[in-house]
Amino acid sequence: MSFETISVVGLGYIGLPTAAAFASKQIKVIGVDVNQSTVDTINRGEIHIIEPELDNYVLRSVQSGYLRATTVPECADAFLIAVPTPFFPVKNQEEIPQPDLSYIEAAAKAIAPVLKKGNLVVLESTSPVGATEQMALWLQAARPDLVFAEQGRDNVDVYIAHCPERVLPGQVMRELRENDRVIGGITPACSHKALELYRIFVEGECVITNVRTAEMAKLTENASRDVGIAFANELSIICDDLGIDVWELISLANRHPRVNILQPGPGVGGHCIAVDPWFIVSKNPAQAKLIHQARLVNDSKPNWVMDKVKSVLLDVCTDNPHKNIQDLTLACLGLSFKANIDDIRESPALKITEILHQELACKLISVEPNLKIEHHKFSFEIVDLNTAIDLADVILLLVEHDEFKKIDPEVLKGKRCIDTKGIWF
Image (cartoon, rainbow, N blue to C red; front, top):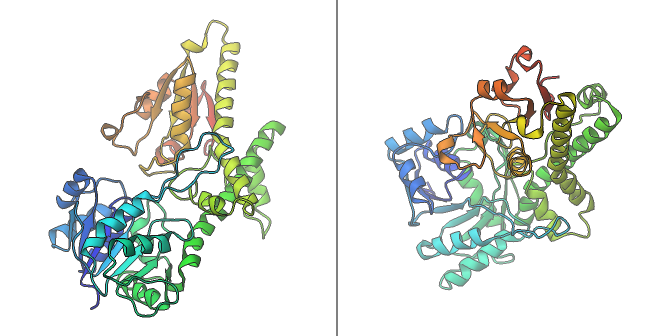
């Protein structure tokens, strides 16, 4: 077998499941992460994130000796880079966010000293078009003694490819196995080398293309979703103004055989849909008009939700003249960016809760059943669900966790409820 040892750099929500997937096939995997606590946790056979099935995969892999973690890269046959690709901060909403590739650069420079002829380096991090080729340039600069893949070059020492993940949080281990993978090498030989790697555990079809198309494929998938959600979110705002139940409206419209409108919410979060379209917009701002507008619509939805909350709180005071805003309690249900996970990256629910806590004079409490609260520091109080319902005058539903779907409607009587996900009414 060409790949006896695989190194996965970045042991987060994608890197650790990928490492465990390879290790489950009895391939020696060396996980690399800059966080010593993460490394220690994995080496105990434990996990530092919440993802169904992952704990069993990691425990078995560590106990069998096929998975271990370290902070320093070691020699391997293939290197998978799965590090964050954030954006630089922007000063205002008119400014287009620019991608920060420093984590990829740092990972490339970290593995460069241990690279050898015949190695494969795959960038899994979601990136702007051209990032994989830029990674190859960083590697070449660090190791001038090796020949790295570039377009038009056939004979190389190190193969370079891009293979983005396309998995759903909460179903990562299954989707890593079953989903099709898009593989794009800088050269055809790079593509085929990466294809051989992923066939170790991927049961779905592995489709080969060029590196830039592979980079753009992941961005296109999530930008398409973002545009669809923006339509639903804009529709919800229009319907609220017209006194129309948007949930009923969408249900009726979706009865058309060729219509499938998505569901609105308090915004868009997570490390993919809320982020990936900006990679396209930042690269082609003049052409990406619809994609850009969709981002603006979805990014503005939290502000609309917050205005709605403030309006309802004032209505409660109007209906109860003996009460002031300071006398009221607002309960925000959910902090993660989607249902039944612990991931709060780019979460509109968390953003809304934090800003309301800063701006409102009322007492604010929050419920998030999926987070290990001791691992997080929030400026607001976290309580259990029953306490929140008992204390709240106004309840703001932000995430459709299963626990919230099971709430008995009777216990909500007498409360003012704002349901941004349409699960109660």
